[in-house]
Amino acid sequence: MRRDSRLSGALHVLLHMAEHDGPLRSEEMAKSMDTNPVVIRRIMSGLRERGYVRSQKGHGGGWTLACDLSELTLRDVYTALGCPSLLAMGNRTESPGCIVEEAVNAALNKSFQDAEALLLARLGEVTLAMLNADVVDRLAARGLSRHPDKADA
Image (cartoon, rainbow, N blue to C red; front, side, top):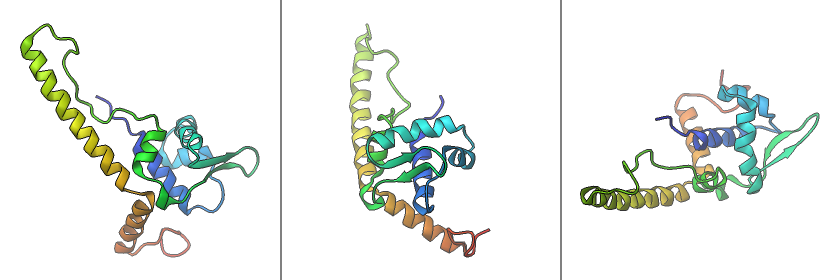
């Protein structure tokens, strides 16, 4: 089963935007993500509707952050992407004709709901500022800087 990586991609793009001075074009982001600019524009449109990013058309245009990273959680981004399915597992059939399968579905449904609630709560606790700090720490541990002109190659 193919995994939905939109949340991961959106977070990646947002963190790059946070350190970039000025707007980033969809083409630039797509190149760094090894994807098509249309994919980036689809991801960014949900973020724009929620007020997390802005877009400018024309020469010198592109995407910029419209909010503080300390106020934006992983759950906010997940919601802006349309709340994609969190779990790849599901019931074999939703309308079973077998009592055994009804019992299995009931147990699995409760477990799935509990797991999703826990995951959503955790996503709500992590801000993009926290992710950004982790990036900075990881770079420092390698003797690198986020800005290529400072130490990074």
